Length: 311
Image (cartoon, rainbow, N blue to C red; front, top):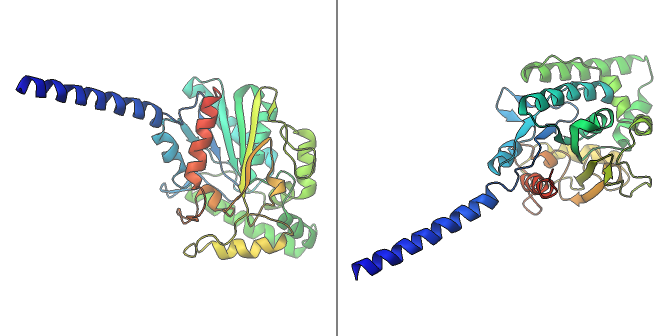
């Protein structure tokens, strides 16, 4: 009787252990992409503040928990896309060298979505995929307003530039970097005219229509995007009122800083999550809506998407 019980118990333990291992093999590795994932921040962004406050709040860890190799980059907080893009490219070259992987999967938020496009345009051999999250590929209405109302060389433009660059410098210092700042160049890069000029030189993935999808693959590089159209999404989030104010500069659906159609690049996964511009990277401090997909889940699902494509 005891031997039979021991045999049954052993079989139960064996099958439980096998099932657990099989479950973990899939779940613990669901984001294990072939190539490293590289996250690129937006304007006035950073990798970490004081070494603890993440720009992509909780997202790198969530991806790593599912098997991903993740790098978070930092470029000038405020500068032209080409300047930021060159800074990002240098970091991508370093990541490729230290990992031994020939390519990376680039994911950029806001202005970072333009930066990653730049890298893929000038060095497509180093890039497996490009994904933008809430990025203004055809300009931002707020940038157009600011550019139109602050004349070149005027006192008000000088003041705006001074405080913008001061903010960028302070953020850089606190995050441990000393990249050059140029607030006016950053603003011009994000206008409709600025992005049009950028798109003419770096067109991969950009839709030809005003609100369509762009090519899903160009030169062997896959292109994706997603964004939100929520504004006031969490009553406890102190950044939501600011998103509500900036959203007033837009005539159509937007996330507070980027219009829905302007966010389109390549294969549009979705453009109307109930998230505002900061929610898209799980800010502030994870205080996002409970009535839509969690930002960390979106990043993990996308990593799994890339993994299943062999990227």
